[in-house]
Structures are given as structure tokens and as C-alpha cells.
Length: 148
Image 1 (cartoon, rainbow, N blue to C red):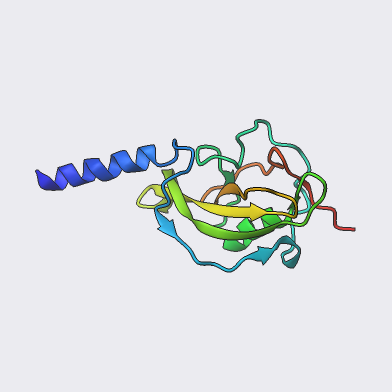
Image 2 (tube, rainbow, N blue to C red):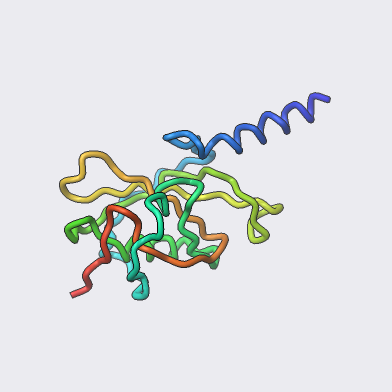
């Protein structure tokens, strides 16, 4: 009976972890801060996101696929601030489990990246999953990185 109680408690915490303004970080990271210019961007990200929550909430993560951390960094390297500012970022941790055949035991997590650029008052959190593929867009408040 106690086993089922703990399973229910963990399930409830998973289900509510991404609905909060600040998600519950299920694993944390001490990755160093990186510059977007130190990574090769995706060249085909040209369209703005279809909604303002894309990439900015755990319920609407970017799906970069291939179980590739490098794809996560390439995605961020494809972006710039609203006036073309270079981004700096680091992985803050993981949150927001969702059902996925590509995850472990049918569940996947979303990674949280803290992104800043010159003049930004507070960091922006980008939510990116590498377990599944999806269309890649430019999130609200960002622009496409200029490679010239």
C-alpha cells in the first residue's frame, strides 16, 4: 500500500511540475555558460512560432530530436535577441515529464536552458526536448541569428 502512495505522490508532482510559473526542476545542472556563436546553427529555422508559448513553457517545448544535446545547442545558436543580440546560455536542469515512445520507459523530460543577452533584465527560460522531433520555429521575443 505504501508503494502505491509513493507512486501516486511522484505522479502528482510530475503532473503539476510544469504548470507552475517556475517549473519544478527534477534534475539540476552546473553546466558552464556558453555563447551561441560557439555553435553551428540550424539554417532552416526562419519562421516565427505559431503561438507565444512555443519554447517558453514546459508544455510547449521545442522538439529537436535525435537524443542530441548538440541539437539543443544548435537550436539556441540559431536564435538572437530581439535586436540581433548574441545569446549566452546554460542548461539549468530538466523538468516536465511527458509521454514519449523515445524516452525511458515511455516517458521523456524537457531540458531547461537559461538564456540571456545584453540588455536583458532577467534570463529567459527555453524548454527543449531532444527525445522527439518537431517543427523548429523562432520563439516569441527572439529573432533569427544573422550569420553575416
